[in-house]
Length: 174
Image 1 (cartoon, rainbow, N blue to C red):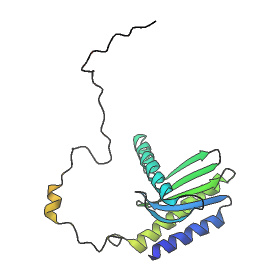
Image 2: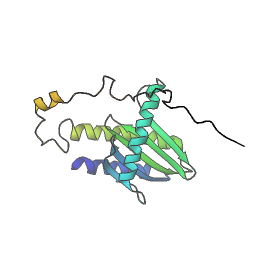
Image 3: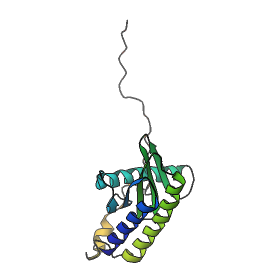
């Protein structure tokens, strides 16, 4: 697929623009790897963890009324993991050493995220992905699949504490 090659080229160019960048990964928001340049790291695992962190970041920005997700920065004792939105369907995750210029990391990460979003939009587009050759689902099947609850998609159920049905045993103590 040509888009994978173009995205990989962008990741490699990114490494030359940011000193102390140790790896980069482009993935879908569901955690599927699009392209990667991450030596000594399992890209599928990193993509899955990125998707999990992204889910939390989306919820945080929504709960705090801070608009759409843009980026996430995690700092560990050995360096940084930065994730940037690449359109609405993909993300860019960068791994950097502890002494990286964080301002430069943000500047180049945001630019590359926008370039990757453009590449995906122009090269893939709607309906041309991996499963585009599959026939559409029959409409009678879609009519039988109804949402289990009436809560909006993306919201979590709220657990209401209830009183126990049994009485707790008295504690015999010292």
